[in-house]
Length: 201
Image 1: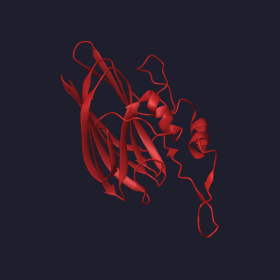
Image 2: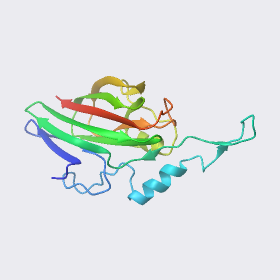
Image 3: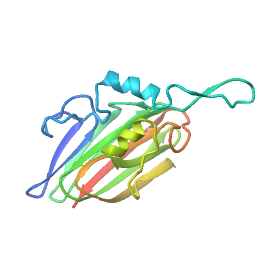
Image 4: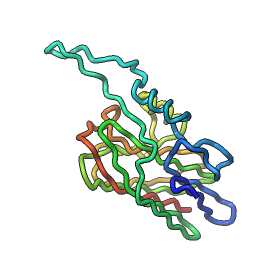
């Protein structure tokens, strides 16, 4: 089994998929791509550097210099030390990640029923990060650098340690760890963090 893809059975007929998003095809989800960017790695790189701003700059600086609009870059696999544990009623994934300034990473959850989801984050080195939870459609807006609509209770800005939780329905969900200035707080260099996701009935 690919370390970036987890298939966990909870109960007799309820299946969830917890995954760090990658550019390869998942064996556990009917051949759907698990790449949240919806394309190849090269597509993601082109799109993440250009955004919807078309490379526009801010011309309102007083000294005549122009400053670029903030952009964000998708990092397909920043995850390390991933561990999965599960029992009859819950599944837990823990791990670490490092994001450079201006980068973001995504965890994906595919639910076939309603579940409770708790995400805990603890920054181990560097500044603060933003945490956003949203639908796959809103993620399309996010990666295009348009303001997304996040789930209630799944948005934290400029945090070094937090736990967010709530109940999510059946569907395809995205959870973003953001170290860019596009939405939320301004980055302060590279950041390393530990995370834990707990899915339960």
